[in-house]
Image (cartoon, rainbow, N blue to C red; front, side):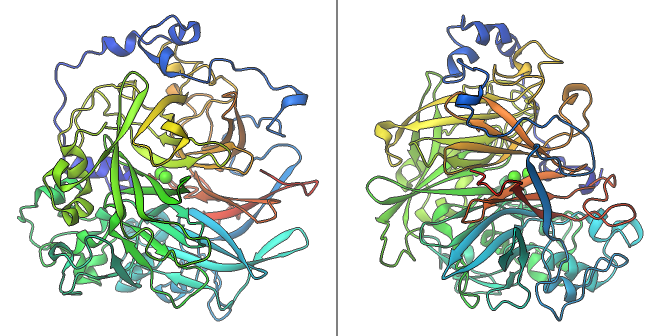
Length: 626
Ligand code: FEO
Ligand code: CA
Ligand code: CA
C-alpha cells in the first residue's frame, strides 16, 4: 500500500512493524458492558469512570444551551449546518494572497511560484487575531494529498523539481488580513500583514536544547537556527497575542540516500525512515537526507511561536515544550500567573504532556521568553480516577535536560507515563478549571506496544482494546490550580455505535443513534463553556461506522454531558480547526482534504478539483455563535 492509502500512523508502522502483544486478556473489555455503565452496577470498569455523564437529560427550551437543532448524519458532498445558520467559503487552497499571483489553475493545480503566494493546502489549526481595528487569520497548512496536488501527473507523483517545490510550498502557515463587508468576510489581498511561512522560512531554536550538539547541522553549525516548519497540525494562541503552530508528523519528509543506513533508536522511535512519504523533498533540498544530515530531524517536531502582527519577525521553535508529534498547544494562565501548556503526542500509545513556565505572565510587559524556560511533565493516570503529572528531569529520566527536550518520548517512557489512544487536541474550559483531551482511536490498544516498546494494555482513560472509535477524557486539577501535580479525571464521552454494538463499543450513555461519531480530533471551547468537537474518522457509513456519515462537528455541554451534531462536512474530508471572529458572529471552520480518495468536488462542484478551505458559519439572524 502507498502512503495515500494509509494514514501517517499506518505508514510509519508498516516501516517499523511492532510485535503483537501476547497473553492479553480480552475478557477485560468484554466485562465492560454497556448495561454496566448505564446501570452503574460496576465497581471497576467504565461505570466508575463516567463521572458527570450519568444524568443526561434531553434539553428543553428553557435550559437549552445549544441554541440549534441537531443536524442528521449524511454523506452529501457539501457542508450541512442547522436550520437558522448559513455557511460560505472564505478561502480555499491555492487562492492568491497577493494580487500579482495567478488564480488557482484547475489544469495544473499551480506551480511552486503560484503556491508560494497563495493559501496553502490542507488547512488545520487556526486563530483569529484583532488589533487596532485590523483582523488577521493565521492558519496551519498541514500537508498535501498527492492524489490531489499532483492529480495532473502520471501516478499522481511529482515529475519535476517544480512539482516537488509546489508541494513543499503548500505546507507551512498562511497569514492574511480579513475584513468584514456587510455580513461577509473576505481576504484582503496585498495586506502588509499577509505572509506565507514555509518549510524554508528561517527560524530560531530557543530554550534548553538550543545550541546543543544534537541540533547542530551543516545548515547551522551553532544549533540555534532552523529552516521552516511543516506538518503543522493543531495550534495554540497565547494571551500575549502570538500564534503557536504545532509540528506533528514531521518525520515523513526525510529519507536516506544510503539504503543500508542503520537508524538510531531515537530515529526509530520518531518514525524517521529510509523512505519518505512520496513528497520527494530531498530532491530539491539535501538536508532531508538523513544519511548525510543525521541531526536534521532533531530540528523538527516542536511548537513554533509566531508573531502574526510583525511579518518580518523570526518564528521561534520552543525546545522547552518538547519534541514529539505535536497535536495542539492549549495555553492557560494559572492562578499564580505561570503559563501552563497542555499538549498531546498523536501516535498510538504515546503520551499527554504539560509544560509549566518558570516565569509568570505579565499583562503589560514582555512575555517573549515565557515559553522558553520551564518544567515539562507527562501524565500518569491511575485507575482510581486520580492522576499525576510526572516531572521529566535529569534525575527522573537519566537524560540531560537538553536530551529530554529533543528525545521527549524516551524521557516519558523512562518515567512510566500512561500510554494513550493517540492524544489529539486538548481544550481547557475558560469558565472552569478543567481540561479535555480527544483520544482519537487506537487499533493497537491491547494488541501491540508503542513504538518504544511500552506495553499498551487497557487502562482507565483508554478502556477498550482495538479502539476504533475514540474517547474524550477530562481532568480537573487539584485545588483548581493548573500547576498542581495532581488531578482527578473522568471520561466525558466514549464514542461508539449503539446501533451495532451492545458492549463498550456502543459508547457512553451520551452517545446515541442520533449523535454518534468516531475519532474525535479537533476541540475548542467557546466563551460560554461549550466544547466544540471535530472528527477525523472513518466515513464509510457502513459496518461499525453505519449511521455516522461524513466527518462532522458536534457541540458538547460539559455540564450535562449532552452532545449534539452541529455540522456535517463534505465527502472524504476531515473537519479540523476552528476560531471565532471577535464579534462572535462568525465561526470559521476548516474543511480538510475533501475528496482525499477521489470522491468529492467540494466546494466548486462537478469537474473541479476538490480543495481544502475555510468556511465561515453565521446565524441568519446575525446573532453570536458561542
Ligand atoms: Fe494532524 Fe493528529 O492530527
Ligand atoms: Ca488533528
Ligand atoms: Ca487528523
